[in-house]
Image 1 (cartoon, helix red, strand yellow):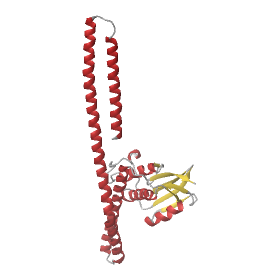
Image 2: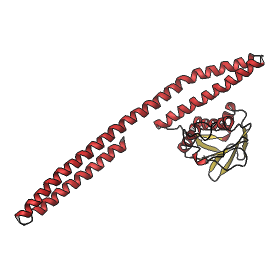
Image 3: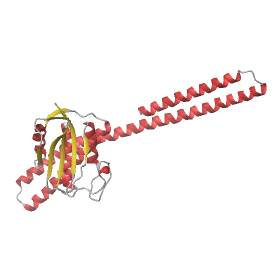
Image 4: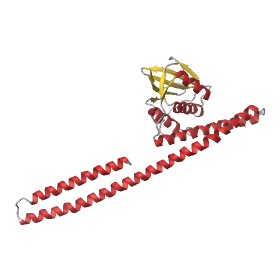
Amino acid sequence: MFFSLAWLSLTLSLGVWWWILGFRQAKTISEISISQERQLELNRVNRMLQLEGSFFLSMLTLGGVTLAVLSYRDHKRSKLISDFFSTVTHEMKTPIASLQLQIEVLLEDTKNPELKRKLEKLWKENQRIESQMGNAFYLASLMQGEVLYMEKFTLQELKESYSHHEPDLVWEVSVPLQKKVYLDKKAFFAMLKNLTDNAKRHGKANQIKLHIFQEKNQICFLLEDDGSGFNGNKKHLTLPFLRHSKTSGSGIGLYIVKKLIEKMKGKLEFPSSTKGFQVKLCLHEVA
C-alpha cells in the first residue's frame, strides 16, 4: 500500500513537471519573432501538448489510484486471512491439548493390546494436528510481520527445556554448555519440532541426533537422522506448497523454519550427507 502511494506521487510529480516544462518551452518559442504562419503552427502544437499532456496525466492518475485501491483491498484481505488463522489456532490449542492429555491417561490405564494400539495411533494423529496448528499460527504471525521476543539463553537452559518436549532426541555438545545464544525460545523450539517431525514422518527416521558446535562467532545446531534422506534439489526445500513426492509434506514447515531463523539473524543450511538427512541452524553467540 505504501509503495503504491509512493509510486503514484513520484510519477505524478514527474508528469506534471514535464508537462509544465513543455508549456514553458512552447511559450518561449512562440515569443520569438517569426512569421504568422509559423506562429499558428506553434499555437497548434501548444494546444496539442496541452490536450495530450492532460490526457496522459489523467490516465496516469486513474491507473495510480486504481493500483492504490487494489493494494489496499489486498492488504485488508491478507490481514483478514492472517487474523482468521491466528484466531482459529488459538481457539483450538486448548481442546487439542485436553484431548492429548485424555489419550495419555487412557494409554496408561488400558491393558487391552488392541485398544492400546488404536490409542497410540490416535495419539500420533493428535500430535500431527497440534504440529500443523502450530505451523498455521507461525505462518499467520509471519504474514502479519510480528516481531520475535529475543533473549539470551545458555545451551544448558535450552537443553533442559527442550528435553521435556522431546526426550528421545540425542544431544551431542562439543562446546561448553554455559555459552549463550540470542534467540526467541518459543520460535527456536518450534523450528526443532518441525525438523524432527519431518525426519520421523517423511524420512522414517528412528534416531535423531543434535550436534552443537562452534563456527567462528556462531553456535551451530546440526540435526542428523538415520532416515531415507532427500534425493531432490535442496534449493527447493524451503519453497511453500511444493510437494517433492507423493509422501512429502506441503513444505510449510521448512518455509517457517527459514523465515524464523532469518528473523533471528541466523542461517539455515542443508549439508550433504551420505546417509539420512542433515539440517544446520547457526545463531550468533553472545557474551
